[in-house]
Image 1 (spheres, rainbow, N blue to C red):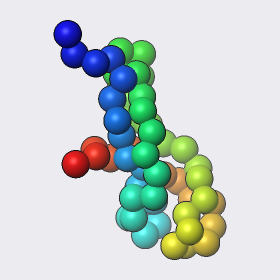
Image 2 (cartoon, rainbow, N blue to C red):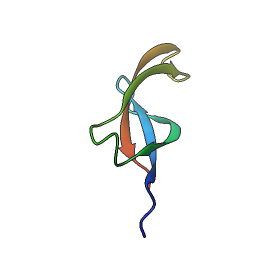
Image 3 (cartoon, helix red, strand yellow):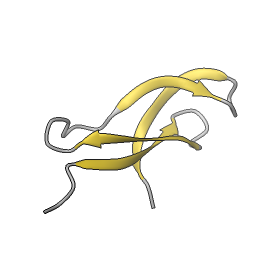
Amino acid sequence: MAAVRELIGLACDGCKRRNYTTTKNRKTHTEKFAIKKFCPNCRAHTLHREHKVS
């Protein structure tokens, strides 16, 4: 049986650095996850989008 929750990374739209990791439920959230979070490299609140964790 496959795990329902999937580990994802969040990358900044401005500098493209991967700053955060989180999990998401694959069955209920099929679309890409995006949230505004603080980017320490840009030193601003920017949009962070979902990317795969290697």
